[in-house]
Length: 313
Image (cartoon, rainbow, N blue to C red; front, side, top):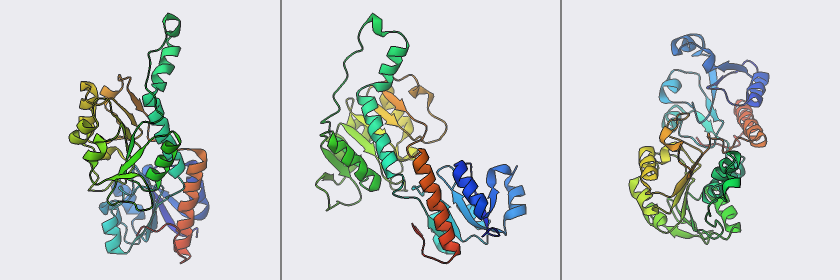
């Protein structure tokens, strides 16, 4: 397959890059000085794209590659891929579900515990030499807190299972009720926010879920409520979130994702009730390697005319 040209849109994992290089004719988008230069040399040779949560395959890129057959995303999220355009052109699309579920759910739990028990603040308290001057203030108990989950898919369900082990009552909002669970279902996100202490965003990013957490939802969660986001930054109206935290209308937040990554609102940096992570929910050695293997297997299956392992389109 070394004659098949595959485009990698941005730096991902070294392991994935090496696996692609060993099997295909790999072209790296970020090594070109301009789009014009890139298209001049590659537009008629590229048959596959490997994208991620930073750069996927938008309409412009897809239209510029007439030989494109498949987009294999190094992510479970598909918001950086123009799925409609792929459907129109008969371009296959795959992603990497399941393999990252545990890691992302683990991070969600870590963020909940870190915010509620003020783990990061405690760490700074000790490092600054403040302990000899007096004990750290009391925090709140996490076990038994009411956890509401936006999106009860693979990751949302994994979070629910973990939170249950802490004795947390689980409720959720999604497009439809899940008959296979005993969790309390709310048909709108406002009611969910009113009836939980921690709201976890774990749904896919679509036109419908863009800014699904707005001022109304944040106010419903209230000054004692905590917001956790391990989905996508654009699930939350970020300026409204910042305002609510600064004004004390929201109790705290744990965020692994942001609207304009890697840019993060500087107003958040000085807030002790906020825990920030640089979009690393699935970034473990084990999971990134498994994701890379799935990307490779999907590409090989396509070019060998075998069924795709994780087809989306």
